[in-house]
Image (cartoon, rainbow, N blue to C red; front, side):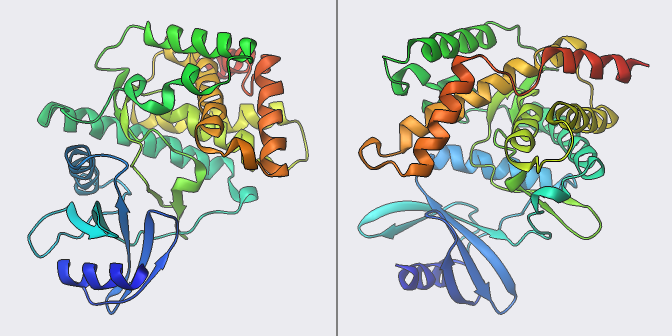
Length: 325
């Protein structure tokens, strides 16, 4: 498989690829004479959606945001079609991004504040991009299959289904306008952020970009940090307050967020939590769950059923108060 990919990529792109290694099922590290690059080979989105996504990220790069630019093919295309195992797939070749994945315990307030600034800039540039190139193919969030919670969460889990339905309905009915809703990253896990020695950040993996409320791009890294980067020592409530405050303060240096949308932050974190739980049912093989998968699923089930929130409304209220003074 990788030998075939190596051969095809060398035919299509103006680089001399020496070796191809799979990073995931869809991402491949390519070693070239000019340095590393990464090939994304997937049918996760159709051609028009991928082209719109790549035009968006290349625009962000030209505006000076930390994202990976693409390498055009010999035909001058940023999205190319290839045939693997008799299946047509789409490929995009990215320049390697600077920086590394930070260890969990190094996500301090300074780095998270810089992340907030980057997200603020991202949303400013997104608005500019949409003004110049109205979106035709990238979906609104609720039209994506991953948000079909009631299709995947088992019928017997009535409490979680009620919570999922209420969260979806509440957010769908929120008023949308140019300042609070538009094109965004959609999956800003801390794992999708690279940090270099100058604390400059690069956002990667825009494959889940969608039209959504901008506050969702703040909810995801806060959720990610609360879920995976708390390493113990001190109160997790205080930790949540500190990271949330840092990200929001950084964001407000580059962009505005209304007090009303800040109030909704816990709701969007709940949306992300239900989203993750639904994905487990969507993608995991129910007949062959590992002990770790069972443990994770039970942990989520218990937390959602008991309506335990990772970020309390009182915490957001306290942060709002400190930001206004």
